[in-house]
Length: 235
Length: 209
Ligand SMILES: [Zn+2]
Image (cartoon, rainbow over all chains, first blue to last red):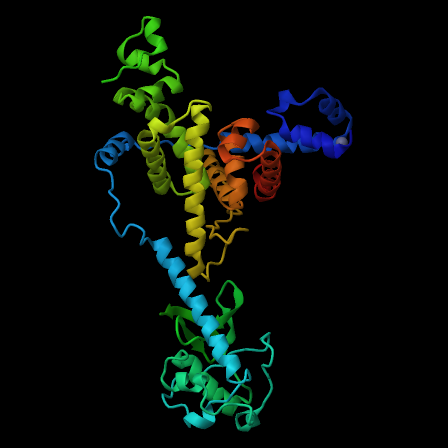
């Protein structure tokens, strides 16, 4: 029997005294398997010797109380937090699907909205949204001011209307798109943004859907640090 | 009124003594007949091991107590449906295990909003990280406390599917066969999960073994 099988026997034994004879003989002459057995049983001793918790002193009293006054399910008992979350998730998925359909029907190419909205009207703090790793096809990540004048881009697309109405995007995100389109010399994408977040412990990058019907990510940008993070999601 | 006759009564034991000497199956039969003492005895036998088991699964004492109570409520309310073809301990651990696993899954879903938790385990669950102090601890009770915390943290950091198996085996010291029945898995799967869990724990607890 090879070392692997021997170790399996050692691992499955109830304790050091219950190792099958064959495995015990092998471990007697194999340093590696002997070391494995020693390490395993020390680990198991550590786990089994770790202190156990007990039920609190009032356990029986509380249990009696619960049995005496059971919770009666209400007619809306199905409306639990879990159900609500599932419903919200389904709504968000549907919204993304609707948006994607609208987007591709509108040409499926990035637009620079700034030339229609005129300027960054709210003058809010602007930061760069790093989209250098955006995977979506058709997203021209380089300077392309001429894109807005391209005939294939619908000038009054649903996206633009959504933007003007303030529903389409988080205003922060939208305004960053406007200014960045003019001043930073690159475009933001319509359907999603890749946000790079940093805190003192970690760095994360994730995609945020910029959708109009369902969830709107409310994004906080720090222009000085060129970072962004989701503060919360608004429905 | 209880109509169950306990085996212990045949040995001359009466009242509470007879109940205490009864088997789990006799007790659950008594619960089915409305014997409150029988239910009380079941609670007395299992409240601590089930609380400990659920606590090891969740690493959250208050919630563990709540789920242990829920386990007993289910035992009580479904006593009439209990079938004595399995060990009662398998039955009660299975209820507790299902509740604990369900709780872990709910927590995992809730953590979707916690995008910025710095420490997570392989299931994406947030784990409190409290690395051992580099300074040597002199007091034995402090060392024991640190070791206990390290074990709790290490178990809590295991993927959920390994956790129940390793807790039942190495803490509750249940047989592979019993674990397989509690978790409704094959014995081979149980052995494999325990082996992997131990390999992970060995890495996490290397300084304590
Ligand atoms: Zn060997």
